[in-house]
Each structure stands twice: as C-alpha cells, then as structure tokens.
Amino acid sequence: MSVIIKGGDSSDLVTVTSDKNLKVTTPLVTSPAGLDTGSQVGAVRVFAENDPGTITGSATLKSGEVSLGYRQRVGIDTVIFSDTFNATSQNTANWRHSFTTMTMTQSAGFLNVNAAGTSTVASNYAYLSSFRYFQMIGTAPLSVEFSSSFSQLPIANEVLLFGLGVATGATEPVDGVWFEYTSAGLKGVTRYNSGTAVKTDLVASLSVNTVRHFAAVVGEGQIEFWVDDVLYGKQIIPVGQGRPFMTSALPVFMQKYNSGTVGASPNLIARFGYVTVSIMDIATNQTWANQMASYGLGLQGLNGGTMGSSQVQWANAALPTAAAATNTTAALGAFLGGIFLMNAPATSATDVIVASWLNPAGGVNQTPRTIKLRGIKIDCVNSVAAVATTATTFAVALAWGGTQLSLGTVTADSASFANNTAKARRIQPLGVISFPVGAAIGAVSTPIQFDFEAPIVINPGEYLQIVAKILVGTATATEVFQWIVSPNLYHE
Picture 1 (tube, one colour):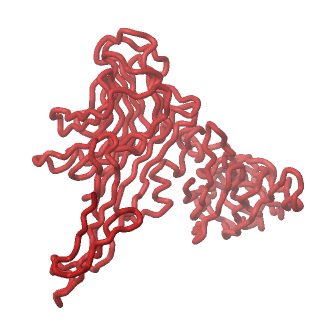
Picture 2 (cartoon, rainbow, N blue to C red):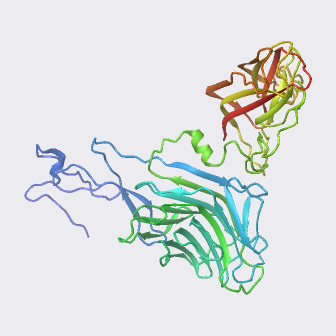
Picture 3 (cartoon, rainbow, N blue to C red):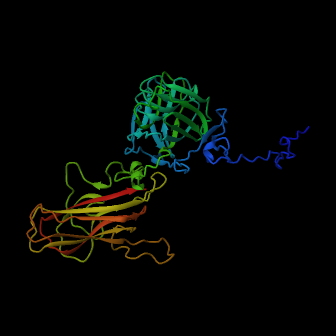
C-alpha cells in the first residue's frame, strides 16, 4: 500500500530518495528580521552523540554552542598528570603508600594492589594516593582515567576503590568521586562532605584478567562513569550542593580494604597500568615545561630510577670532598647540579669536568626521558686559602650530547653508517669565572647566567657536563674553588 502526498491545491507531489527517505528542504528565512525570527529559520538542530546508550538504555546527546561573536565554541583539554607503573618500585616523587598487612608491589607494568592475594583479616588495607591534589576550575570537567584488570571476581567483604578522594585506612573517603568494585558489582560513587555515599550500579561483574579503561568525568552539575569508552552511568549533582565534592581539590587514589573477614584465599588482586588526570574544555595555557613538571618530571629522581634529589649533589650536613678535576672522570661528582669542590688547578689548555650527568638510557622498567635544559646558573666561591701568585680564570662551557664520560674518548662523530654510531660532545660556551690575585677566602666571582631560547636537548644515553678550561691558574696548596651549578630543566 502506498500513500501519495501532495501540496494542497497544487499538483506538487512529495518524493523520496533512493534510500526511501523523504526529500525535505527546511523553511527559508522570509522576514527581514533574519534568523532570530525562529519560525522561518532555514536550519536544523545539530547534536553530537557522545554515547549510543548501549548500557544506559538511552543515547547521550550534546548540543554545540556558538559565541556572541557567531563562532563555534571549542574546548581544549589539558593533561595535568600522567604516570605509568612500568617500574619495579614505588615512584615516591608522585605517590604516597600506606597499608596494614595487605601489600602492594609493581611488576610486569602494573601496580598490584593486594599483591599476594592472601589478605583475609578484617580492616586490612593498602592504598596509593598522589601527593598532588587536582582542582576543579569553574565549569571545566575533571577527567580521571585508569587502566586496570582484576585477577578474579571480588567476594564478600572485599572493597576496591579508585578515583578522587583522600584515602584513610580501611574505610572509604569522606569526600570525592570514585569507582567501587565489590561482590555487589561495579558502582559509581559520589560522597559530599561526610554525607551518605550515593552509589550508581554500573555492571554486576567484569571479566577477569582483562585490562579495561575506566574514566570518571566530574563536571559541576553531572558526573559520568565510563568503561572502555562506553557510558555505564551518570549522576546529577543534588541541587543543594555547590560542587560534586566540597574539598574542591583532591588527590587521585587506588585503595583496597577488607570491610570484614574475607572467607577465601587467594582473593582479588587489582592491577593498574596507568593513571591520567585532565582538565577538560579549558585552555589553561600552561607551557609544556609546566605540564611536564606537573607529572613529576622536574629536577628529581624519576620513575624507575633512584628517588629523591639523586640528580643533585647536595648533602644535608656535609660538603663533598675536594678533588683535582680531570678530563676523563667525574672526579668532583657525577651529578647534574649542586656543589662541586675543585682543588686549585694550574693553567692548562685541556678541558676538565666540573659536573657530569649521564641521562639514563632507560628500558622497560625505567621510562627513557629526554632532558630539556632551558637555562643554567653557575656560581663559584674561593675557599680555604686566598688567591695568590696569579689570578685564576676559567672559561666555562656546556658539553652535551656525547655518549662517553671522558671528554677525549670521542672527539668526532662516527663516519656515516659506521657500526655502533658514536656521538661526540657538543659545546656551548657559557662565559668566564675569574678571581683576581688576593681574592680572599669567601670571595665570589661574577656568576654565569645563561638562558636558552631554544632548549638544549639531551637524549637518553647521552651526557650533560659542565667543563672548564683553566686560562690562568696556580695549583696553590689547600686552595679550593666551590662551584655551585643550578640547572633549569625538565624531562619529557
């Protein structure tokens, strides 16, 4: 059966496309008032489908916005924190760990929560929480992402939480947003200022030993819970709350605890591969260096390496031992910055090493990082004895990019396509450090301050060194020059 549609008294008939869709032309603007007339706008409403509703039952549609200047508004996300667990030990620069009996380890690219899988006693717990707190800014959503897998289904009294909140012992946070996985299934949870936790059922269970991507998107009026880029649930912020959580800024955390006696062992081991936090829809205009510092990639020990101020020679209650600087070894200290004590040298045309640092080559358990040196400041203090006989003058340079510690081992790059390419140091002159005859103990030379508009790039497996050429000098017994090297850098 077919129906013919025609326009009133006219002979015009409605037709269809080859796909059997009506051919439609939207109404034209007929009023000089233009588009604001509404009823005669030659336009359609445009929505984007964020999620088809596979789990929730209804599609999630969002409309775009146009500014007062008739321009399409766009949002720019900024990643403000990201860390992986490929190392075999805790990254104490970024993470705080606390536990009772229940253990955590890192292996095979994962953080293992309840690593032994044998914790059964009530109130046992373990959590890892970022030192950094993440703030909500205006209407910009905060996205918290995890990759995780689970060794088995949770049983009674096992509680796994991960999201935003201040973890404390064997209890859930009093304020925040997180995923909860128990024998009752996976839930999205919000809790405001010690109030009752609001829990949304997401899924009854998850397949074991399968890495999934979890994301909680926290907006000012709504929170969305995503698994593998599928929306599993959302919560509307109650009208009586000004924000999703009262603290406004919270750390990211992963926590497991026993709410009572767990009746079986082995039990659930949760494995996390990475954590990422982003501010969405707002151009923060942070520099790349700022973002890298936010990841913990400044002048400090990095993931998989020696933690603390391992790149800086600066002991709490002692000075390093003075030594004669050489051309072949890091006799004054194998560090990127800090204090370096040099015995007074005689005039020499041969470069000597003041400070030396090998950027680790890295590997599967230590992420290879590139050093971006943005600037450097060098001070020098005369100590122990006054400058006598002759003045002391150093020409100072930055040696970078070489693959050998000794300055004379590789003096030129390998020939083209030679086997096992060797790379010679590059030299960037920095300036002069000088002390006149009679400079007293404690005299300070004019410092060198050198900023690089284009950063110096030191790749994994390459050296960054401060070297000096002694233009004028006398090897005065007991006289020592104290060099203070202050780099401005980040890793990426």
